[in-house]
Length: 303
Ligand SMILES: NC(=O)c1ccc[n+]([C@@H]2O[C@H](COP(=O)([O-])OP(=O)(O)OC[C@H]3O[C@@H](n4cnc5c(N)ncnc54)[C@H](O)[C@@H]3O)[C@@H](O)[C@H]2O)c1
Image 1 (cartoon, rainbow, N blue to C red):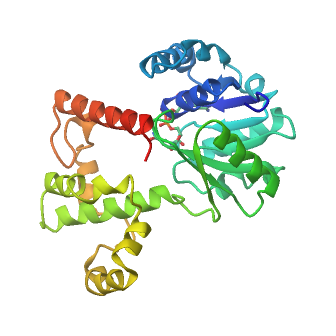
Image 2: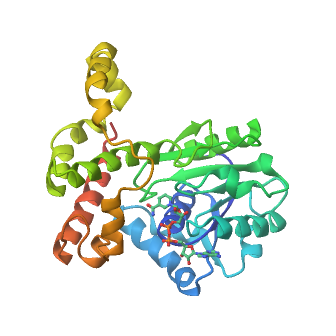
């Protein structure tokens, strides 16, 4: 491994603890900060538990040091990644504090899911060192990290960020324009919009949507991306299909009224026991377990 770096992670929740774990397992020293004392108190043990579950050395967790104070967490950082709540004013305030306390040479990254990096970083003094690094859950099982540059990010910051994530075993890709949702979440939510619309229009029920995906093109997706698939069948066939179906596919610019009704009615999904479908605690546990087992298998034998 190249020289160990000082990594600071701000936010020790679902994503932050997992990101800290990946950097620590790759040999880096990790300082982690959270506003919640409870989240911070449990973070090293949570990482140790994940490592045990992955058959990795639990001693890697000792490289993660919790800090109750954000200033001390980022003071010596070479690279800071923020994974606090998905809230723009909060992220802006955090980066103002981070920039004040971190070394001038530190790279400052946000793990936001969909907020443009430009909006988060626009008030910083050193915007050329600011960048997006969008990981996927769980960070220690899903390889992709989208690296998003803004109009201000300099070439050295991009190159260092790509090299760092490559070296820790992730699959970094460069997203050249800072659009909401970057690449992965735009693709994912284009599919979800049509999935919801199919149910809303009574074309099929929610369970059928999921069966169709899981029993057909979902099986291929891990080894055949959409544009590889379009080339495989031919761009001429793709054009012929689009001439017929695109005008009937959902293109509403806002969220579906059906989705808004579910939320207004308290049908929030797993957390309320019902969303598009009803979920018993056993069914929820079975789905979570199936996803983890599937991702572990994919990690053991990558495509
Ligand atoms: N959950 C996902 O699948 C996923 C995937 C990719 C990116 N993200 C993004 O990562 C970020 C974190 O998401 P998460 O799922 O880990 O959320 P989470 O709720 O599990 O964790 C957020 C953590 O931030 C802490 N926090 C709140 N205010 C803070 C502050 N002022 N200073 C420091 N810490 C603070 C909370 O105490 C909590 O521990 C969000 O921006 C989210 O959109 C989430």
